[in-house]
Amino acid sequence: MELTCDACDVSEDIYRALLTAHWDPQEQRFSSSLFKGYNVSVSRKGLKNLDDTVHIFRFELHNPPKNCLIGVGELSLRLLGNIVEAYNIEHNRDFEVIVVPRPKAINSAHAEVNPKECDVDKITKSLAKKMTKEMAIHSLDAEPEFT
Amino acid sequence: MPVAYQTQVYNDEVCSFAISSSPSIADIYDPLDPFSICSGSTSTSSIVAPFNCSNLQILHALDVKDVPDLWSNQAKYRWGQEVDTLQATNELTENVKELIGENGVDRYYEFREKYHDGWDNGRGKKLSTHSTAMLIYFVSNLKNITISTPSIFLTHNGNLQLCWEDGRKGEIEIEFFHDRFEYYIEANGEEDVISKHNIENFISMLTD
Image (tube, rainbow over all chains, first blue to last red; front, side, top):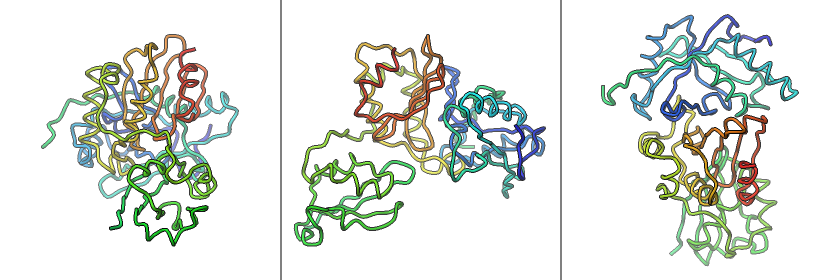
């Protein structure tokens, strides 16, 4: 599948913040809500490295507090394209996912994962689940809540 | 004195309702068509009716995902009629605690205490007490069925979600909405929604 529009290039990788709400480290399970729906915030690895990205993710967190950020998931857009392609074959669909740059003052690498036509469709539980299983995980050491 | 209740409703697009128990309000609504006085958009609506507090639950039983459905469905309900609905709560029962274990209980309290509206870059809603009620309802219907150490999550809708591995089927994920279950069964790729009224069929399907 080709990632089209003004989307990020397929050669890019993205980071996704992993909160305790999304990830159960003890059981090593992820919730599909990590990628389900639309407007999923991510950060582009090519523009901000992991350390900088973690710093930004933590800076943004207030509700919940910083210590609810327990990891960062990394996913290549080429792999994302393959996942969507397999999903389309399995479900006989023609679904497309794009990652669109949406720079913010706090993070120039900010982007959003979206269905190509998010007014008529959304990323489903099953597709989101497949995406979570292909992420590389960077676990974070616990950070005190009030720092 | 008129009594007004404000209740937050649960889904993405759903509304809040103002309800009055004032008898004087009766002359501004048609008892045969109580929703005739419903006004507003799909994001905010007000319903005024001669309710008392217990009848508030009737609204909880309605599918208020969008107003046209609400209007068309309301004929199924009569003011004052007892409706099977669940009591919102933010406390887990002992059998839920037993099912999700210490780790799950700790996670639940973290969701309840630390996650507020707007978490995860503005997308997330705070934990829904109605979702907690649905989780309790689900677990109380499991009876002798065993689920091995499920993980508990908080979704952006403010709902609780359970996820576990079924020995035969791979991963199963269920999100607890106030009136329904949204589920995904990895082994057969099935993803669907089922009403809370079909819970027995749902559970037997999960354990087949």
